[in-house]
Length: 216
Image (cartoon, rainbow, N blue to C red; front, side, top):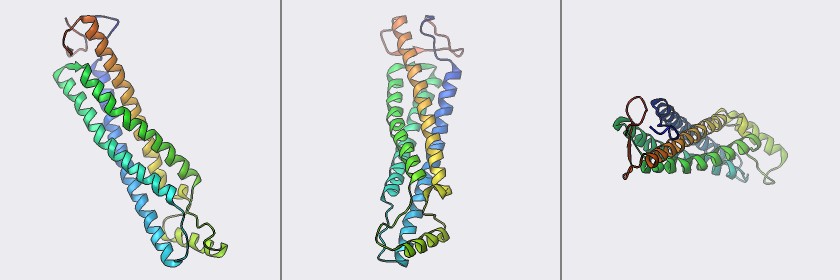
């Protein structure tokens, strides 16, 4: 065994699998919460326009952020099982193919970048944004619509909405799992590639026994 390129042991595989599985769960929850929040604010728009048809409701930024969250989480929900499946195949066969691991890294890298942008956008808009009516109505009508929105169950201030806060929290948790899983997979790929080169294999297959040590 080449000590300069230690083989990834079972604990590393377990950590990666836990990260990927947790990311799948958190992104699924964020997807569900984002869809719920989007539905709530679209229903709120319909409700307020029914009360004051001439009102101009400005919530496009938050609707766009929630739509992006849904798309991003959907992509992650499909990407995560793919990477997890590749890792499970390697673990069951006691083999590490550097080429397949590189594919798994790429599969995770893109949703990780998209998820970071998603979490940042949701955090900023939820913390600072609110449904506004601009100059379409006067102060009294604005106060009336604010009160009606709160009474309807969906506050105009996004940070006061529990579903909106939950969406932000789980989007960050999902990104964290994606990032950690991606970093660990990259390290496994580097280790496998280095060990293959050090041992002089002509193919791209590297076998590991149960104890995580390589054999020649």
